[in-house]
Image 1 (tube, rainbow, N blue to C red):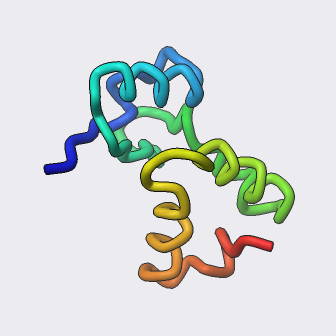
Image 2 (cartoon, rainbow, N blue to C red; image 1 turned 120 degrees about the vertical axis):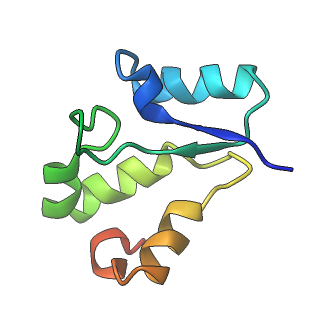
Image 3 (cartoon, rainbow, N blue to C red; image 1 turned 120 degrees about the horizontal axis):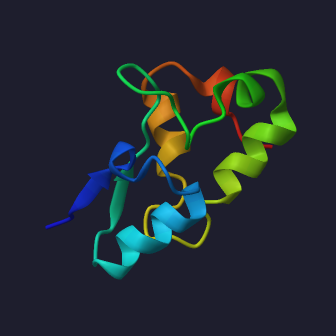
Length: 87
């Protein structure tokens, strides 16, 4: 069974610190808060929409994780490939 957490619960931490904390608790997945009821501190929406380099840098933060590439696959499955397409 894979367990994860919604990153909004650690909104006061950086993305890297959040991923580290989740890993220390043995969690293998993270649902990145994309805004709504609170801002999206772990998803720089304007930057990744405006720049391919920013998208690549953002997705690179997940490299080496058990779910590396999951964000890109999610984007493809939901018609967002133009926003998250990797080089």
